[in-house]
Amino acid sequence: MRLLREWFFVIPTLVVCVAVASAHHAFSPVYDDKRVITVAGVVTQFKFMNPHAMMFMDVTDDSGKVVNWVVEFAGRLNLSGVGWTAESIKAGERITVIGNPTHTGSQRMFFKKIVRADGTELLPAAPQRLTAVEEERRQRALQRNQQK
Amino acid sequence: MAKPSLNRAVRQLFLLVSILLTSITSATEAQSPRPNLEGMWSDAPKTILGVFCQGWCTDAGINRLNALLDDPANDSRPFAELQTEADTYQREKYLRPRLTDAALKTYPLDPADDPGFLRCEPWGLARQIFSLHQLEIRQRGNDRIEMRYGEWDALRTVYLDRRARPANQAPSPLGYSVGRWDGDTLVIETSGLRANITSWRGDHSDQLRLVERYTRAKDGATLQLTATMEDPWSLREPLVVKKIWRWAPEEKITTYENCERPTEFKRVKP
Image (cartoon, rainbow over the protein chains, first blue to last red):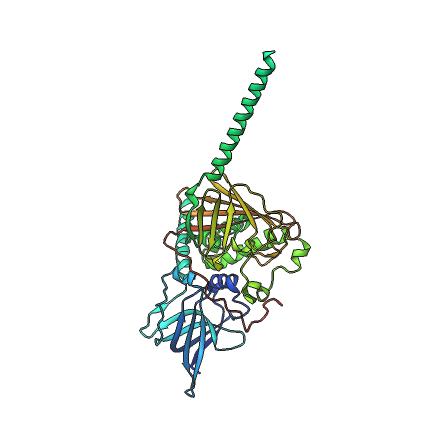
């Protein structure tokens, strides 16, 4: 199986994404937020729906056997807020998915990032929200320091 | 002899005017559309307060977050870390002390025991009103408002004509809501709720009474909810919880097409 890499670390900035997903539809009983895996394959179907969008992809392992992986996303309501549509991912597209594996190690993962064949990336909403917040925070600190 | 007749006539006239005034007042309250809350609202603005209160928040948590942000020693710490610290503070210092011994037995509920996760059961009102994504508010006729939520595509009716809850109405997940205007604030009182869980994964009983106060900011860009919850079974004293939405006329609510029941999961709590 083309399981490219597996890291065992916690990224502090992921706390918000995980908290949101967990409060949403119980992320933590299914997925391991402390591990990140990368899987490459060909998309067979992308279902842009609520409560969670789902993608199915064929992954060829080292012996040449094709295994079907399931990738779970935030819901359509969440993804559409940052410009995703039903056409954001097309069947037949070759992609690399980075995400959290299940506790059981099944062929399923929760989306964190997709890298297309041309190198462009698809990202969830949370990092985009945090960029705006960090800017507000910088301005706030600047004002505070100027008042001293 | 004419005096009693005159008094009677005055009394009758006074009575008539009183009835007339009461009717006009009631009709005005019931029919006033107060359209300033109507329309589509959605996830909170991308601001510090918006992100912190996109689900639920308390004044204790907001004050804690502000204190953390105002301390230069925290400038190099990621915002998510400060947000988590403020959230933990509000759970431990504000929420937990208000829970009864009965509620503390299961608080916080293991996510694997969440009926919404396990059995795809739509949420009860104490969780629904703090759900992420869209909230669409529409006036329907003169006597009611409909509130539709993106999460679960849930729909509730709020009666504005002070009608009493039908005596034979069984408790339900979203309960029975009556609303009134207090100035520019829409006040909704809900009873008849079935025992369920809250957004902070705590149990509540069917004795829960919820009072929601919705106010639109002066610039029209945000909507704030302040909810007061009283439940003698789960709360030692009233709990006040807040939430913020952003004005989002461009957004649409899309239906729930599929809720997948989990086939593999583990308990998170030891």
